[in-house]
Figure 1 (cartoon, rainbow, N blue to C red):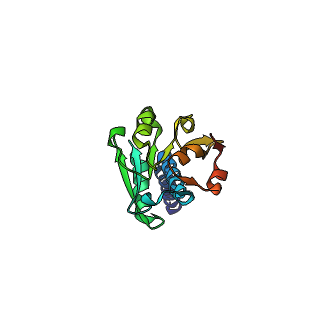
Figure 2: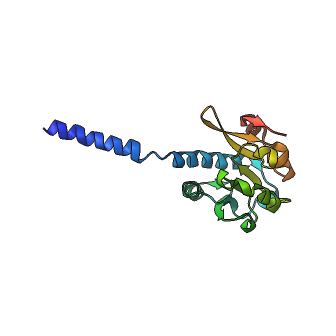
Length: 176
């Protein structure tokens, strides 16, 4: 009887771990946050963006993404800059950021975001098909069931951002 209880208990623990801990949205958010963090290592911002906090803005960010960004901000830095995460509810609320992330759920506001950050050195990161041609510097895509990104280096350069050749080489597509 005790062997049966042990096996049942073990099965419950394994099930709880495997099914209770695995949330696809959280996993996706973690992957994207790792990418966003690594972009800070391979892109150079102008000097006037290299002091104070490194601000990552998100337009209507989901709870998983914002949670993961805040965990990253608490543990990492962009060079000597501390991360500051801002969640904007509308394009009109957007203020000066080093990076702005526009998730798919806010893609209809992309035109407004582009107007809002025009002339600023803000890295625009999106996740909808065709966004790298519409004005984003980096666009997340899923290819062969893996998270990848497209790079529009010309859009980054318009914002006075310098993209390293290493980052360029990692892009699944280069858009001009």
